[in-house]
Length: 196
Ligand code: 5GP
Image (cartoon, rainbow, N blue to C red; front, side, top):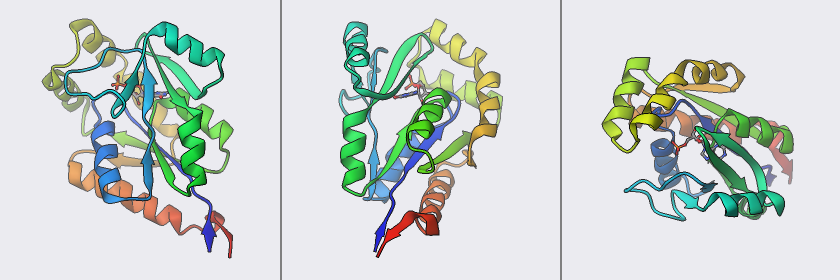
């Protein structure tokens, strides 16, 4: 039996725990491939180039746009972020499901390219105060970056209406298990079984 693999998109406001949840999920589920994005933003001290992001200059990013290397890309908080086509196509052909931590602009573009093969999940933080507390605690953002991200929380939260699922992230382990449940149930949907 062959089943149609799919793309899981995780979005949420800055500080909602998307990256942490994605990392935990790939440890739990060997059939998942985490899409490593390319970005022009500065690397944070704890991040590893090629693992968390592929960090490149703006010039290199523009060149990749010109060469049509991106499945989607967007400008977010004044920096560029993009998903490379090649690893996505390669891993889909290996029958892996793909997990992406991208924003709403990326979600819309990926849905256009992979119509009917995308499951979108929006992470809901317990409260606005809690998001601000987490962002400040992280201590990895400049004052300006922090203010920009805080000022966009309300706007970004409104995008949740475009998503298939909402997962509350008040308890990390519970949130990871809920995302895992969604993925497992989606794998059982009849529309994904294409051959036997
Ligand atoms: P951060 O700088 O906090 O790692 O990420 C900022 C925002 O960029 C987050 O909302 C994250 O989901 C989004 N993002 C990360 N990679 C990509 C990407 O490849 N494409 C798009 N559209 N958004 C991305």
